[in-house]
Length: 106
Image (cartoon, rainbow, N blue to C red; front, top):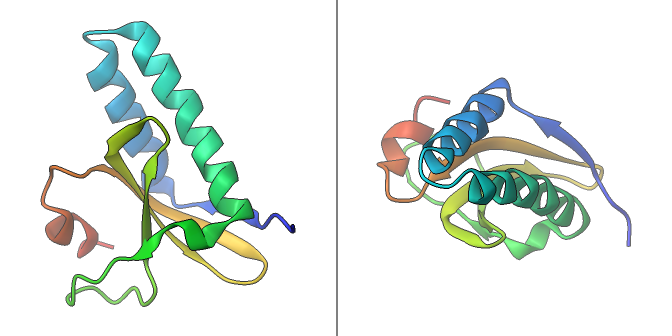
């Protein structure tokens, strides 16, 4: 099975760092596990982008935006686009937030 190249929007680094700091405030080991899980999930999605489902907010311009959860952290969602050769990670967001508002900023 072919693995796609992974591109990451600049905001993703800020997303992951913010979530890491939030988790680390209570449990540093769990935060490290989160960071590792994000990287592992990105790699999984590069191999099998069809894991996720299409996210339809009806308001943003990103056609075929998909979402999938961070492995072991189902509250945190990865939003991404893909084609035959690449996957582009758009955001990593706490699913309890207002997703439509956040994604409309893209």
